[in-house]
Image (cartoon, rainbow, N blue to C red):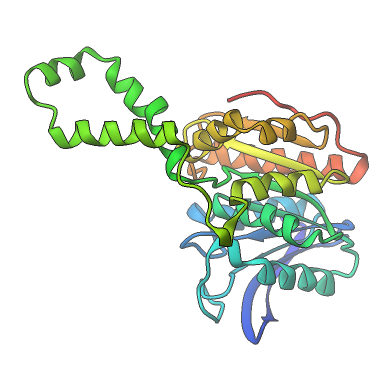
Length: 297
């Protein structure tokens, strides 16, 4: 039986009205959670995961606000990319603190490009109200990282099968497929195009910098073991000295969710995410985070 209540809240963001659902425990902790929603998605989440997640976390004693960013779901305004949501996130933090006065510190929680948005927010604002970030399958996409991931987890597997070589010898592998493979190899080897002057620091580097900024807080990265976005993130970490240093920091943890796909469509995977998050929140509430789990997936 639920021990929390939930209600609709509306709040302003640069003249636009944003809509969210506030989950409030009977006796909320001083630590609250803001669920950021990314991509072509709204506050319910795939398979209603964000609804179920918010209820589980609220029943554990933590207030949760899940909301639609501008231009998505029921919120007004013009849609924007994940790199341009800092104002929306700040407005949501203001709102959960105004609606639940006991909330003094806030954790940002997001999946895919919303996870990227959370870390970019920390890097851009250094908002001292942020106690931590929970990032699920963080989005770090570039042409080079995608090519490396596909070569390692798709093309290498195909090249290792007798069926592929038999098709090749029989002329059943199209010239277009071979050209695509060549393009992937060149893209992976090149490291991608140089950053433009307007984006001198690529966003995955700024995400790593956001992790570093939270040295007095905590970062939890949850990775599905059956998801190309998660595998791409691992590829980026393995290729980046900066990201490798991040996962050596004591406030950063990395955990695998076994059997999970990108959106945690199975109930067991969703439950694992909920339990891992609640355990992490209680750990943050009770003491400083312990040494990070840097196990590879």
